[in-house]
Image 1 (cartoon, helix red, strand yellow):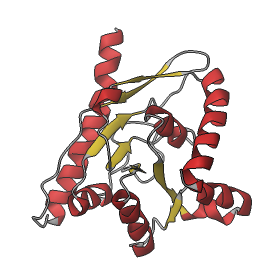
Image 2: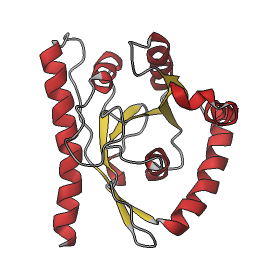
Image 3: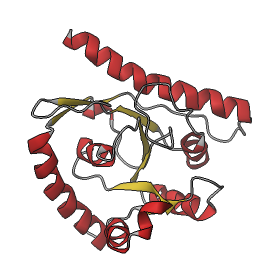
Length: 203
């Protein structure tokens, strides 16, 4: 076990106890998570979403996360994030260094966590999804795993995290900008549908 995975497991365990007591969760569809490299994409509404994404994955998986560069300006927080393998991304420009880190993560067979909306959004469809996850998935030949995290998390009641079937994007063919946007939009539609389906089942 490398040092990043070691500290990742420790922090995941500690935070899971704290958050799990206050806002408990239950994972549905974990059988849809493939072994090996994959990009996990979820909706994003709160600071706790990266934690829920990590909790939803099996313990064997080490989740790499892209985090906005501003978070790393805090020396203590930046140190902790780097300690567990999280890396910064500049959301205002094409960040080649972040792309290299993402590719390295996938080459190592790890899971990469991305929030396609790029920022927090308090309702489905409010933010336009970015195409970075789609571009990476095609370039690296890895599946995208859609995940729905409740936007309004309830205290002391089960918060469902729903994982959908992997999406495979054809490797090799260069996608146009319009195709990239269409696939990214379809991905977010699938993520939102996971939440609506679960709500309907619960009645």
